[in-house]
Length: 212
Image (cartoon, rainbow, N blue to C red; front, side, top):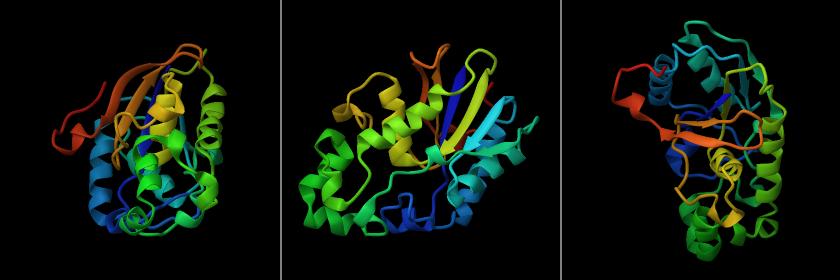
């Protein structure tokens, strides 16, 4: 099975540089809608056996825009386990402001999640967030389904894709974060062992091609 992890399109809070977790949900930007239509075209030749999206509106809207362009559109299923981290007191705060007040914590958040003190910010732990999504991924039908689309969020998908590839919590952001509207593809035959096929692919924004 190939799993296509798509991060939602760019939102107003992304533009403003604000933390946007499971308790915040700003709308997609107009420019992002156009890019997501390109992403839909990029993935349009692929038949998805299942399509799952986080219940947050920015992810649901992204999933709908992608499926509108598909040659054989699949019904979209809401999956709450795919929602973004609960970021607690960080929600809606300017990233630059928090970084100036708590530089070590923000460095940990960006580069070494093992050192991030989620309790200090009353946020969900990296352990809980990654296991929540990984448990959902493990429940998929690896025997019968070939392609599954998962639409969700940057912090959570960055962490969980690296977790599924076998990396420890301190290395979950070893390649940086996933871009808005990016697609990352993992492959697995059993839901336990995963291979990386594509990472943070946004090539469709410049090239009008289709993935096959």
